[in-house]
Image (cartoon, chains in turn yellow, cyan):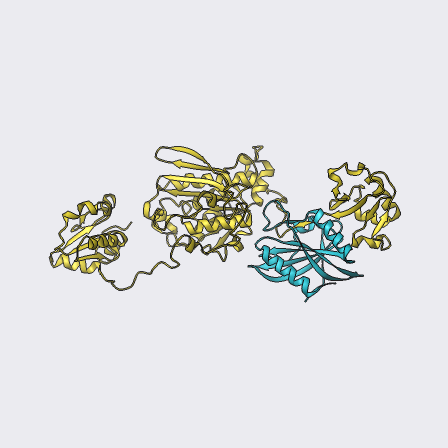
Length: 481
Length: 139
């Protein structure tokens, strides 16, 4: 007779026997004989409809009967039948349990979604149950926050610790002129609540770090990267891969943008595309290189579209494809992205198993050297430059900014020699003269001073704080930008 | 009441810390005397969940079968299943409940920022609609 092994907790129903001999030619008959011999087992193994409970698996020797002939699987006398529960779980709440209903007001609000079968009531409830984290509420975060709120994404987390300033308003349309000086989180949350009061906005007023990333990101289904720096991009990528959350990526520069979805269903991650960060300073930020104000709108809305598609489970996600957008040519191109089997975090042999120090990884100094309060060697204060001009002292003031910056505002006494032209125009300068260089804030002019010193100039000084400091200290009619 | 001896307890905590930020899972083998359960061996099992394991675990039935066979071999009982909840409490989640089995004790270890924080033992009902807390003692 075949025998059935009884799991420990069920032995109380078999008179403590750990093995029961049964009659029957099939699994179905054997189980039926088992519950005839020990009727108390029945409700433990079968539900009211007489079907095996969902957590019960039956094995014939080492094989799951679901992959044999199920109940009709034949059994021989020498066979051993095991009863094995299926067990799973996890801290996550069941994602398959979407929000229960939409109110009458919500149905009206989302009617243009509801009438499309691809979204419908089911999809709108998925959106309502979705939890999306936006890293940054700047250029990309602004359209993302507005449209995802409008679309009815139930819970939207925002990570930002910045304050709105006038230079943001050219593109960060979630903030208004009245918000200048306010926290971006407060300003963004107000705009989103105005567009859709049914949306819950979580404010995380911190810089995302290796220490807090897991804790912040864990609660969300999808992470949308709207950051503008490499350390945070690698941090978001690694945390997404380790937590198994899709990373909806976008980046912008001047007139060009990129977007893709990383770390989704076995697709590539950011490190597959860029294993190493660029050397610090090589890729200018938007603050340095500028950005067309509309560009983050286009890219941010591609990210928003992908986010909504992932939530709804419709269409073809932007996975394994890097979308490149060129605003000047008004062209989209697509590059194939492949998962790198040697990727240190999502490849076959993961070597990065925890979050690292991303500033160090990207070669960014932990703390940017704070500008010294006084004047350093070779620096001159704008007020002193003004005094020299007023005293008619002989010296040459060179402005090493670009011509389009010069047009925004300049010091009348200054001669324009853009930094890039300095090597070939150095002969316009006389090393016997005293020379002062300035730019916007003092960085480029410091490079100009270094260059001139190496070229043999002795009497060169850098105007500390650039034209911004000039505007503050000397002439407020010179606009800041 | 479920009592976990110091050796298996250390093993369970070490296992949970090693898989952080992902969930771990394993089997607990020991002796049962009425309502009193003594865990003597913690057996690491593989989390076979296909997607993210940060908030999910899945046991392969054949692994559980092997654990049960190992228990029989050593004259012990398969008492329960343990798993970890990285960066959240040791509650019995909806997911845990829906994929549980009323025959076993379920110990959940809360791992906060990579370190053990607290643990609870749960006894789910047959309908998978609720779980009762079981007194847990660990050394």
